[in-house]
Length: 385
Image (cartoon, rainbow, N blue to C red; front, side, top):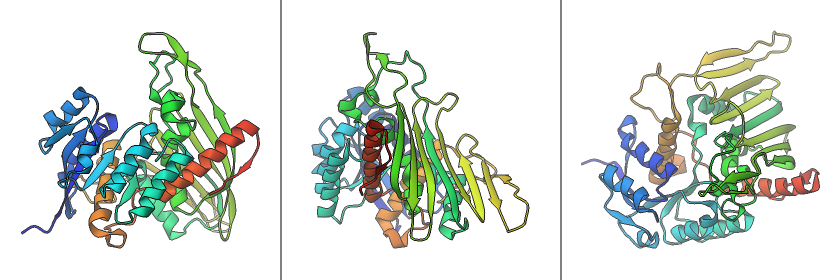
């Protein structure tokens, strides 16, 4: 008899990321060493068309509904992946958690700090529920290797850290406005709330918490056409550059966090650059097979080395190391990490990179709230965690 744990998932929000999540399940056999068998058994979305995509293409789906509360009382559902607009996070995430369903939710875990506080309170009241935040890009092999070097303490004294996510989906000014341009749905954070967890996941995991921030926020395209073609205001920030100071127990250094929705030439670029006195390393999804590093010994030459990052993932796969890793692979790896932690606990995980935590999401809210104040006051603001 198989000892593999079966986990029955529901998906709330059947849009782009919901479909990506389901597609990753279809490639679960790509993982060569797992002890978990997840299945999507139910889906929820107000759109019949969106839900029908799952019913037609995911054979394990047994229930389709427009009311997510039906899923919360279903004893045949163990966990939920939730991908809904930010203004719905507080209500739906809290309901999921209080129902005892494990949750992998999209960032930013609440439209603002008050909403995030509600979610954190629900988690504290239900400690038996595993709750994690979606952040898949650190599972790229190059990024994964860089985080391993951070854990090993290779860098010596940190000189500077640059992290960012440049998602240039809105460069075209004639693109029809979507909810991410509306404060009532997306929140005042703008690009920070939607992209910031990706940029901050590894810095926060490494203990690099900014103590202050000087924010430079910009709204590049101020109007876009609505569905009827009428120009309407774009209310949220397109781009954000956060200049921060990090202070740990033994050192202090500057860190820049950059999130952009308008970045010419960049379709979906995540990067992390860490510069130290003994070792430096840079990785970007712009060149996903390349990993740059420089080891330095006093008196030696300062010479960067650039190597191909092979397909060496957190969880072993059937693909050989000579092939390329992509975004869909990173989602599969993140889902594997969530299932691994759910099945085996943090201490029993097969590798050390776990998904972004609610505590890390809370810290991003503190950073983004301070950034909004910094922009309004044109000043450096101390971050209150």
